[in-house]
Image 1 (tube, rainbow, N blue to C red):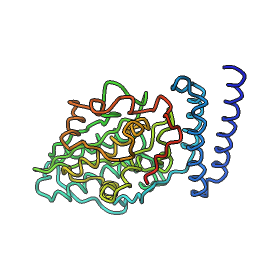
Image 2 (cartoon, helix red, strand yellow; image 1 turned 60 degrees about the horizontal axis):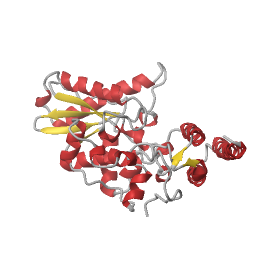
Image 3 (cartoon, one colour; image 1 turned 180 degrees about the horizontal axis):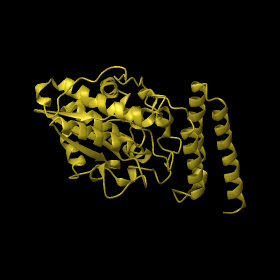
Length: 325
């Protein structure tokens, strides 16, 4: 890197660091922090062309994105939706006899499964003398443990339960984020009905990574699921129910809404540049998603793999606005 490149990188690092310092000193004022963070996203897009070589971004820009991730990670835990799980350690769980689930109402059985699993979560994250509030726990990277716990509890009641991984773009062969971004949930079957049980869904509604202005920033992962779930009233009600109860019936509509959030979050700015429209919806059906999670199909068979996962090159219009209008 020549002198001008060094100078450019130094100036940009100083500017990004100034955002970092401002955010760090204003943590108690969430509105100021979020405004500054949104301005930082816009700044990252503004400077992106200077780091592009034949459309591809160089390593210096990747370093700035890493700094951006650290800034986001430093934010206090808060959510873009009221995170109020229906759970209180002071209440007793509904009593369900082992292997006798079919003797009870489905709602009581699910309430029992969710209560026991949530109690286990709280005890895991709490100290001996201080039980944490479930609504204030960051459940990132705890989905596998919670999902298999749900499976174990359900099976102890004589039910059939299966844990499913959701890979980025529902594609197991290649992680489009290099690492991570895989999620687990549990299907629990009671009689003729199937239920989605996801006790760590709140991790996708954190303020730190839910902003549509994140879309289009090269090397960044785009916006999280919560951004898309709150755009439409029906999706919002679905998300609030799953966050509150820990489960929803796996109807055709609910399955689509649940997986739509993931599918939308996997798309990067190149997808919208190519389609020339900001339409935060998908044409996938329940059958499509069931094929996805069972490994029979994937999102990359329907969308350009370059448009999914981390955006690896610059947009033609680096300042494209992704906010819903």
